[in-house]
Image 1 (cartoon, each protein chain N blue to C red):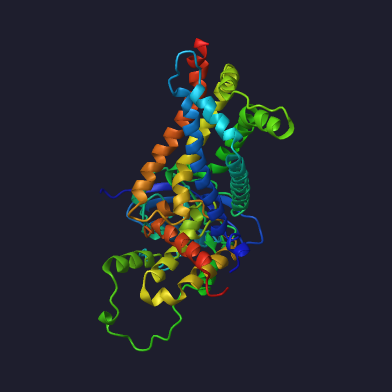
Image 2 (cartoon, chains in turn green, brown):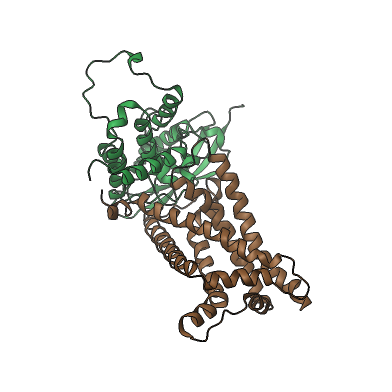
Length: 256
Length: 230
């Protein structure tokens, strides 16, 4: 594809902290290369703001290669922008043309309070993991890989679920701000493996209770999470989570 | 985890809505089957005899009347829990998005179950007033009660055009509600595994079109065709 430069209008959410109200601010950026990533375009804008003596826009980013789950922009109504199975850092400016206006918002959810501008606090996810998203056995030394055979299909499914990077796009995209796709991926990848088996029932119940405590909405099977997930986590994981939960409550989980 | 807590978590509430939804889906099948008897060809000199007899059986049978209590309970749980989910979820995003994804990431009817359900409820109130209340009121309070001929009642009620329109709109709302609800109920019970997902989806779409279509054809048929012969 031919390289080209473009001028854009950005409408970006500005908010100093979660204690004050936010508002949109418009910016003009010039000579943006079609080969830049979306975040590089923000770097250019921030350099421009610093040069003008203004506050740069706070946004989350880390690896910039689509695996860490830090970037989190809601771009023109889409979590991580318009490309499917893609993170914001991997969205490239060739998607846009000269003169476009792009509206950039933070993930919006009661459980993801804004820290500043486009940065939100996603520590609710860490607390959900803390409630049961682990295997509590002393594993000792690494054992031989073949000493615990795992069916190929299950290994694949567990691996696909484990590819969740915990970015929170599912919450951002869900009309109910539900975290079910994230929680389901975390539960599924452990429930499918023998190592996760002993704590299966408690895990499902405790993680769901923590999810509710954090104030995420309830899943109503709308499916926007699956459509927006940068790692292609399937709704089948939510079906599995429901099965785990229903199974746990009818057979009685370990904690009562 | 005790039973009360089990059904008050977000998945617990979903299980109640999905479970009662499946029960209501079963009810729709029976209701549709009995009502479709109006299409059963009559012997000379009879009108709607098969349906009238079936309706009288349903109305007079003690077991059916007892099951009806379960039906109302299921309906009320479905509505109350559904509306609770809807109202609680609507508070989970205090600041709305400036630009929303709209239909790019989800279907409008999946996002509008509260609205569709409310439309169905409004239709249902009119429907119960037309066909359920008169007979059941007589059954409960009138010693000299005798089951009213429901076929005659249908002919009479559906002779009004506005009633036909409202009933058809009620069926359209039901179709969209089922289009999400059928699959969703199976998903809630975790039955939409890779193996069954496509089948459940297809059956759901077929069911969501077929059942409301049969229901909607009744007022239309009685208004335009069935009615004219008498």
